[in-house]
Image (cartoon, rainbow, N blue to C red; front, side, top):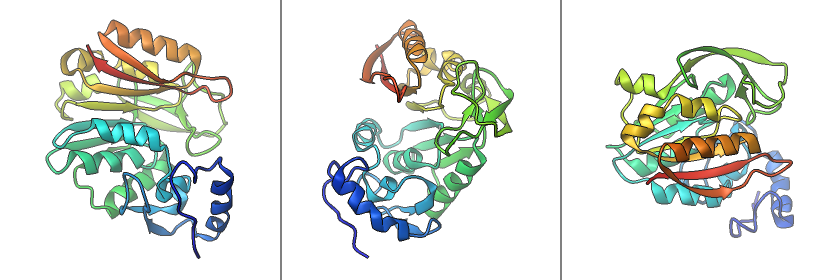
Length: 259
């Protein structure tokens, strides 16, 4: 079976060529373990059915992944909050090297299993996985599994509409873990938690004040976007808006650096 292999932009899922190229991908077993063909994860092993095919074709979020790759440095520490099945955790692991470390936080049981498998099968010894949600304080909460594996979220006042399928998960806050010296201080933090961004930021105020990590934040509504931007500015961060939240996607992304 051959797969068309042009540039990542041409082979995106929304392009005509990308859609044609993906037709034979239906024949690839979901449990198949393959090598990533292109991009920043090239050569690493990936489970086909864990997420969309673009992850192992090398087209997944290429602009964002390239930006991310340009920030991380050997020896640094990265927190992946809302790690999903591990795409950015694997990327970070490769970039920070053996001296650096990656802490990946993921409460969804389904995604957590794939995350652990991806870390194990690629022998990422500099990655520590936590099966918890990150919020403003330690505790417990209901986690909505979402209408698809990428949309799971903690049940908060501003989360997306519930799917009706929930599980109980443990919660942590970054400030609490840092105060107990459970994790190393961060140089970079990626936050993508489907509506719980305010709670994550509320639970890391001391971290932002003391360690000044670079933060890549995805928000999922205009209200959350504006609220998180205000919080980051109040903490003395300079902001670069990568993507404004729009009707239909409600996705906004912000890169925050210490001023």
